Image 1 (tube, rainbow, N blue to C red):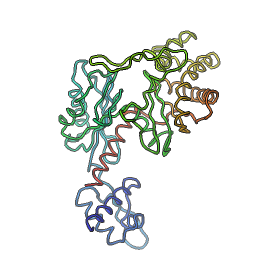
Image 2: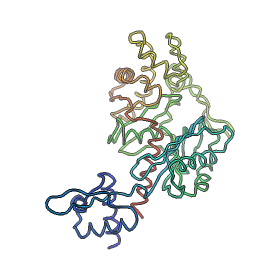
Image 3: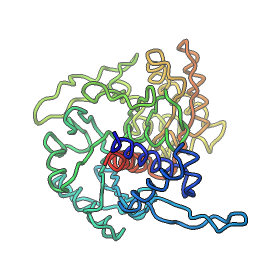
Image 4: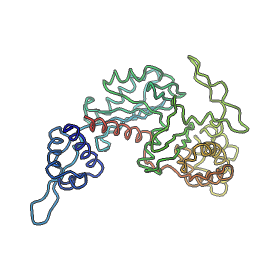
Length: 386
């Protein structure tokens, strides 16, 4: 029992210092409910483990200044990766979540996934001047379906080389636990911690970019589904559009996605639609941005895109009733409030619930931010439990 109590006290102090920043011994005791003696013993143990250090002083009244204790930033590091078909971006963060290095590499198209990730992580560690052995957690964001039971990518249109066995091979190569997560799910993680869904327990995140995807958060937890396919909204059957076709997985061939909602709102579909309204661009996002800038002339195109996206949003809302829908991805960012407002109105016209539809509030690369946050949660839990 004494050992368990020590573990509970250590965890309470660590969690407090991570969320509140440096505190005095008295403040730690007051905020955790520990006595002065117990708080002192707890800090001594954490200092001995190299997790806590004196980080400054707080001026007092008549007596001497009180020492401020904080988490040692270098006590643990994590790596978050955003893996795509053209680039792999890796961020190294300390235990506070401070990014100490971010490196982007362009993998050779013939590279093995294990070699690609190894190269990316090693380069980022070198840039951060952090030994690979100091990484407590590695989280990789990828497009495609990740099986929560095995941790492997079941299939990915953009990353055909990622298949069963990659998860174990990565862990063996990096000599540590590695977690692979769907990229849109990681964006939802970032949105709940840093963005428009901060501290919201029930919401969905609709990603509209090169492809379309959905992140579902229920009761404050990601909902992945039994096989990891929750949120594969591109397959959603919609009126007037052919079905996605034969989606059964066949060895050597990826499931078809030539139909369903994906065929209406992918970046390619948006680009083609924009051309019919007289807007041209190298991407769907450029076309949407041009329509927003064009004012009244661009409104019909924005109405059409919003109507298409509303089909997916309404279908999700009548099943889950999340209350909040966050729009993310290049196309969504380009549309901004002009698009979110139209989607909210369009959803209200076709379904009995009216969710609030807002634009993403995460700055920078949201997949990377989500990967780092997921890695931090894993690393901190490991430290708390040790």
